[in-house]
Every structure is written in structure tokens, then in C-alpha cells.
Image 1 (cartoon, helix red, strand yellow):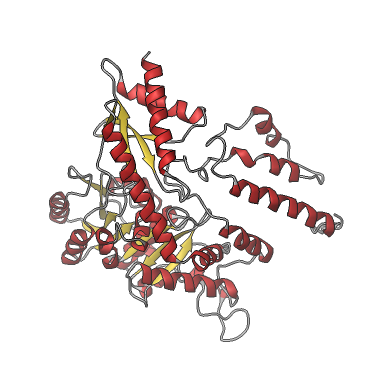
Image 2: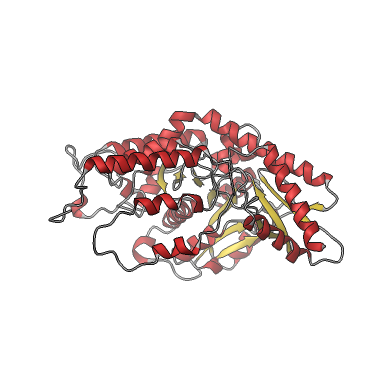
Length: 471
């Protein structure tokens, strides 16, 4: 390179390296079901990244090829620990095109806003929300939740953008099984985490609607303003789906914003097995969900949808003079994402979502979701047949919680060690959680590659390691 030119001196060499990396990447995807699930990063490879700032040109390609075995392992069919999608090869072409184009999808008249708007139109229809609603493709449900909570805030307090919110003025409600991103959104927006009321759950780990009504009444009597009720469509601990229609009714009666956290569970609307329990999503004022979970789009890609486009736009639209639109030219365009969210600089995330849906079709994606739900029931039946295993929660969707039991043992410590050894030996990657104060082995099935044989191997390994540990 010379004179500040960052293009390759030798495009033929660049093309050769790119082809080689593409071949390695395809091999990685084609062999996703082979070998260890998780492989710890070796110290010598870790050390190669811990260097001084590079001042001179170099060749990072060999090192990038070396990192392929050392991801989190979520492409493997026995990655069960967290709700991570497994991805799909369909994302490679889109990411290559998006990298080559290097567009800013924050606005202006070009292909990225057109693609994003089409994806949002599809999503509004899939989720049963109004066709004239609104939305945005974002990094994930955490960002989507912040955006949704801001719109809810600004709808309730029309001067909040300029004057902010008094401490303790607004309160919200969500269940004890809700994801931490809701609490985080209250923190980020300055509402304060204490303003988020935690509603008790019933024995199915679903929001207790009687307790919700009591909390709302208490807060109103104290002169507080209820801001939002957040229903959960697929709790991360064990997959519970709140009574979304019941929450929607309370929210409507009380004139409170109804938001649904559907990070992975909302995708169940694409299949058959969970559709009826998720129908209340259509009544939400806002919805947050991820494409990179059950849709199997490659990271990162999430979405926020709104019933009221005007309320969404009013919460963010405030362009600087240099971003003024026009009827013609590049400053035109009917959809500027910066009018609907906090980011002006945005990557072309929508392209890989569009390509994934266009290549596979939503019926096939829905079938993989139903398949995962069926596999969770298979695992539940297998656990019930084993005297040394105890189910810890119902299995409403795709998450199983159980533990190894043995007399005279510290069961929390025992099951924690079983999970660690499963991970370290590369057999499988479940995680742990706590339910009713007790530690459980948590198995999330979100991978389109998982089969019954993977679950049998997991159970056999849990039984073998458990027996090994108790001697």
C-alpha cells in the first residue's frame, strides 16, 4: 500500500486468499455436526492476538484460518446451553455482498432501505400486526427492547424527549421469568430498575395476572403512572409463554402499553405447534424478537415492530440539517432508518434476513421450529424414564430443565460439575439455571441440525458422568 491507498496491491492474490477462506468457511459449515462441540482457545493462539498496535502491513489471513475451531460451538447439533441460532449457509452470500457494498443503511435512496422495508412488511404480516405498522432491523432483542420502551415512554409523556422523566414517575411490569434486557432498558432510559415491578409467576412459570392487577392498582393509588406491561413469549429459563391475550386485555382496560418479548418464542408463529399460544402477539403495541435465534439467520439480526408507525417515528425523527431529505437524488427515499431508531450508521443487516427467508421460505423455517419442539418432548420422555434424572419444570416449548439425583449429595454442586465436564470434554454444551432455588441442567434445542441421537448421547453422558462423580 502507498499514499494511504488501502486497496490490495495485487488483486489476484487477494482473490486467491478470498477463495481459500471461502473454502475453509464452507468446510466449517459442512462439518458442523462433527468433532467437539466446544474447544477451549489454546494459550498460544490467544497470545497471537495480544500484541502491540500493528504499525506496518501484514498478512492476517493465516491467523483467521486458525481460529475456525474456537467459536462458542453453536453451529454444532449438541450445543444446548443458550438460545443461540445455528445459522445457515444462506447467510454467506448475503454477508459477502453486504461487505463488498459497504453501505450505510441509516438512510438515503438506495437498495438497503428498500430491502429492509420489505423484510419489515413480511414480519408485520407474519406476526399478525397491522400492515401499516412500523419496525426496524436491529442488532438483537436487547436493542429492540430499548427502542420499544422509549417509544412507550414518549407516547405517555409527550415532553419526555426534551425534559426527561422524573425519578419514580413511571413504572412497568414484567414477570419473574422475564429476560434481563427489560431491566437493562429501564436502566438505559433513566427510568431506574426499581421502577420495573416483578410480577409473580404461577406453577407453570407464567405471569400471575391477579398479582399484575394488584400491582397496577397499588401503583395508581400511590400516584404513579403505569408505563408498560411486558409479556414474555418464551422465557429463557424454561420456555414459558405468558397468557398474552390475558395481558393484552388488562393493558387495553388500563390504557397501558403492551410489549411482548418474543426474542426466540415469537418465531413459533411460523410453525404449527405453538401458534395458538402465541396468537396474543397480534395485540401487542410493540414486539421484540431475533432472527439470529429460531429463524437461523446468521448473527447479528434482531427486529422491533410497532402497531403505530406515527408513534414510532415521533420518538426518533429529528434529523440534522445535513440529513435533510429531498424529492429527488440520493437524499430522497421513503424510508430512512434513522427516523425510527438511535443509529445513523448501520450495516446492511436486512440483506441476510431477506436472503434467508427468500431461499428457504417461512414454511421450512416453521417446520424446523416444530421439529425442535418435538425433540424437547422426546428429551422430556427420556428424562422421565431414567430413575437418576428428575425433571425440574414443564416443557412448553424447546427448553428442558432437569438434574441428576443421588442420595447424600450436594445436588447443586454435582449438577454444576456435570455440566462443566460435558463442556470441557467436548461432548455437549448444556448450561445451568436455577428454578425454585435449585440448580438445574438446562437444555435448549434451537439447532436445525439436532437429532434424537444427539439427545440420547447427552443423557447417556449425564448418567455416566454423574455415576463417575459419586463414585
